[in-house]
Image 1 (cartoon, one colour):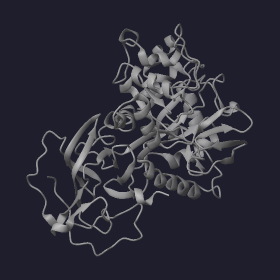
Image 2 (cartoon, rainbow, N blue to C red):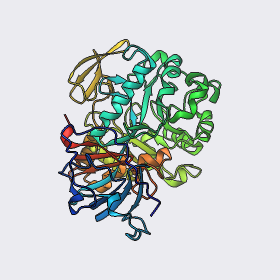
Image 3 (tube, rainbow, N blue to C red):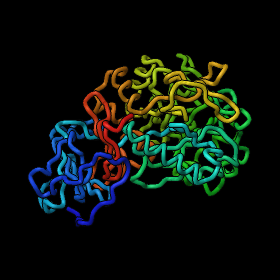
Length: 463
């Protein structure tokens, strides 16, 4: 057991206004709490021990398990799935709070690799609030806090195609930052503007560009100081100079994702062999699969001989998919998932109306109509992102692909962590990983969320 500090942890996030500070001291028999109790509110022990938990790790289920967390450093100390797990050298009782999960599922916190905005704010809105950086950052923090109720503890703030002055103003405020008070950015997802004008979706056409100077073109658009904060760049590799830029982008640790593209299957194989390792919102904003020319979708079934030089952990690329029942039919979801289950990453592609009532909202020079989960540009049938939440996508995938929850959880934990290269810190319950935890029932309903060892949400808080 690592050395344990006995100082009082700094609790953060949501606080129960009805908290009872008279809870018994942690070293009494009554310090074993049910999750229906105050659930750590008012508890100051630096070590948390979850018992009777069903741990879910990499698609496997471990019932009747334990997980130990250091609530001060925000990391997992050990769990029943670790090969050297032992209860030897336990800390003294006054340093431990025990939480009995009564069989509920304990999962790594969810990761959304494509979130354009939510709860009234867009990440590309340079005029948010009073237009100041402070107002923008407060809006980002608000989104991060609200995401907890969807099970999300980390995400990639996503910007659709926009203009250099927008990127250079907002990106510094969206760089990765390890925090406990809100879902944290793992780096931004730059969905454009190096896209095909033939598949713009709702992106402003006048923002779409090519890359005649290859990697230098990316630096000029985003700002050279902002490149290193990028986690994912979605691009259309058939555009001028873009295919040639892929190796330089991957050398910087950026995940290159293919999307908003008319690239054919052979072009997709070439891009993957150069380092691209993801497909953005599969089926959408790309040439639709045909049995004679499957396009980018065909990469989900690519034989190994077509991708011999792939730099992916898997030969075939990962892929984002929006499982909201709007972007992809439930049968299409099942087809994609079962074609390549180990590459599936659920994403919301949510826009700022997520979490808001149905209605008409201004978006830059355009207006978006929200009808439940459906968002579209006013006066058109063009889908404008999604209004779905990630826990809903998870439950939909379970139903439509007919898979158990422990398998489905990989698509919001293990897989996105791997595609982002953070699998040692996020998306896992292994020792030394960040203690970002989502507790669910067997149906996939969120019950509690922990961020870096702090209890930040419980279902009773959900409005």
